[in-house]
Amino acid sequence: MSALWIAHVEVTDAEAYGKYAKLAGPALAKFGGVFLARGGRYVQLEGNERTRNVVARFPSVEAAVEAYNSPDYQEALSHAKDASIRDLVVVEETA
Image (cartoon, rainbow, N blue to C red; front, top):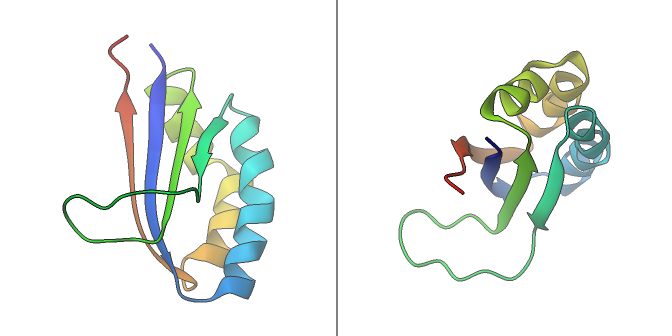
């Protein structure tokens, strides 16, 4: 069953985060990741506001976790770790 990768991000260093963004897309695509929303318009209804929200669909939870743990994504992530405050969850779709 497909899964959604949902990230809520506050960028603190735009230049470093730009390096992450450039590398992350191709790294996730290798595992079937397709972006559905990436930094678009949003309305914060509850919880901590993060100004950048990203949703990607993967073929499965396992594929998303494999993508996250891949060397290519970890290289991308090395640019984001000190350049952002992030919350990330992978959720299996029900339909």
